[in-house]
Length: 151
Image (cartoon, rainbow, N blue to C red; front, side):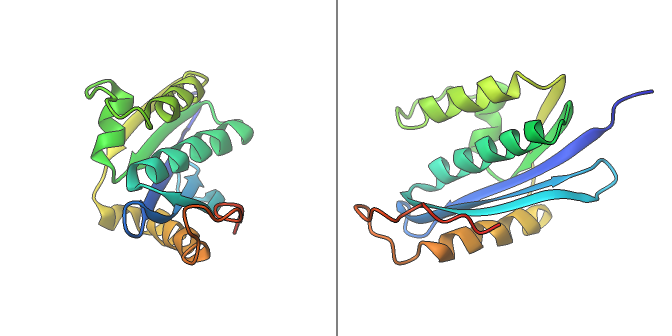
């Protein structure tokens, strides 16, 4: 019997780029049942950092839930193409995040990354906005920036 493929939807964003940032993660079974969702503020960051932070948390969530096969859906073409190896990671700030995501991705029996339109990522987008809302008053030097977990 084949092991089903779980679906992971992630999104990250920053208001101001850089600005108050957050991400959302939605892990579902192959038939669309919700396994877990996460919304988190990460403090002051860029959109791309928030996208990677969401992906990393999503991969950790899937591993924690015993997922072996995973299809990852994101509306960040940059991150998807970097994870596929089609684009190089040139930004020095993204290199360690990419390396962490690669290390986590290597732990799955199978994994694929797919870029999707924002309209197909509404649940993760909503959670990402909740994360951004939670740190909207954060400043770059604020010690509490990024410390709140919402779900």
